[in-house]
Length: 119
Image (cartoon, rainbow, N blue to C red; front, side):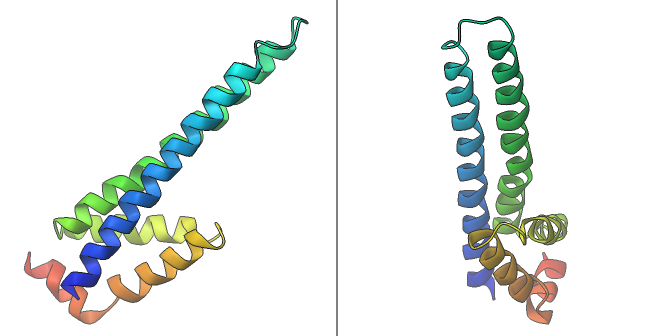
C-alpha cells in the first residue's frame, strides 16, 4: 500500500497544479479580453469575473497540492485532507471522480490507515 499512497500523492499534486494553471489561464484570458471592448462597463465586469473566477479556481486547487505532498510524507492530517478533497472533487467527472474513487479505495484501507498511524 505504500506504493499506492505515493502514486496517489503524485496524482493529487499533478491534479492540483493543473487546477492552478487552469485558474491562471482563465484569469489571464478574461483579463486580456477585457481590453477589447470600448464601452465603460464591460472591461470592469470581465476583470471582476476574471479575478473572482480564475482566482477561486486556483485557490481551491491549492489544498490538492498540499494533500499530495502530505501523502508523500505519510502525514495523518494529509490523509484526512486528501479524503476531504476527494469528497469535494467527486463531482468533476471524469478525472476528479476517478481520482476520488481511487483515493477512497487506497486511503480507507486498513493497511494504509496502519501505515499512516505508524509514521
